[in-house]
Length: 375
Image 1: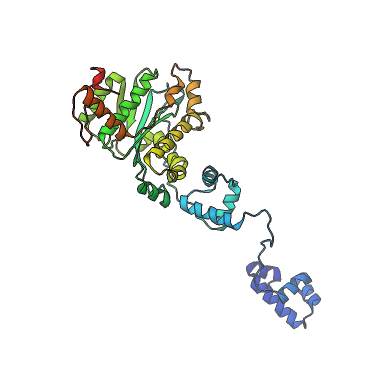
Image 2: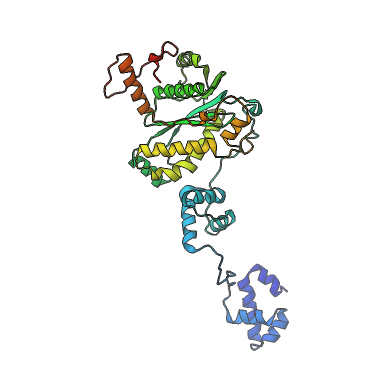
């Protein structure tokens, strides 16, 4: 014969129904019913006077519980950003100045049944792309562009604000592998003219600040660079040869070969665009915010990548004991349309080329006179 405790383990409702049947057969005697079933009199009275289902164990008063308004707000931000508890905790503090522990947010997401975003499975053990410990600063660079208007990465309100205020659409990003230092510019258009202009601008900045030795720049096969054209790649490398640099395109669908700059794009979304883009009414304010973000990255943001050991790019550069001054990390964030317009105006003065409302791209030959390359 099945006992009360065994039946209770199968179904609490069936267990209490058994108590009521025995209690009814004994004329409502609580003590006798408890003795027969081997339970306490309190259990018998609860089955007699209460519901068949188990009562909630939730406390009636929780003085340390997160207020309901904050819990609803955290749930909304989690659904809006797609972040889990660790990244969400840091995001809420950076944007709103409110600190919630990771465990608190984890509990809130759990009881509100916020699903964990799906992740792509790993393809195996990773292999380093470089000998990071032996790398000389500014000898290996990675270059890529980022489409800022990304519906998958940005919340809807941030995306719509960037479109409404006509903020830059593209980010040009070159990163030094040894120190993780970044050099960025922005534009409203994506073209090979801007690609070559940005490369030359960064190289001239590095050479001006005492960077010596050959530079290798890895790029993808986008149309804004060489676009998979061997002739164009040869032409660009010939023009960059006086600056001691060479472009090395990666094979198609091999984004892992420029993984450092690709991973930095995620940080751009989470630490910069999601927080500061809505505070920018125009491109001028956006560029000032972008300059602050680049300076924060280069001087204050810790990196825990391979061989970085929690150092900032500035600290890593100092630890290498090179002759390069840290001022090299203060690269000016520019809008490439404005820079190209300035170059065309200088060309019109020194070379005599007329300018109109449209941009004129002059193929300057580096090393054949400073007037031919006036920046």
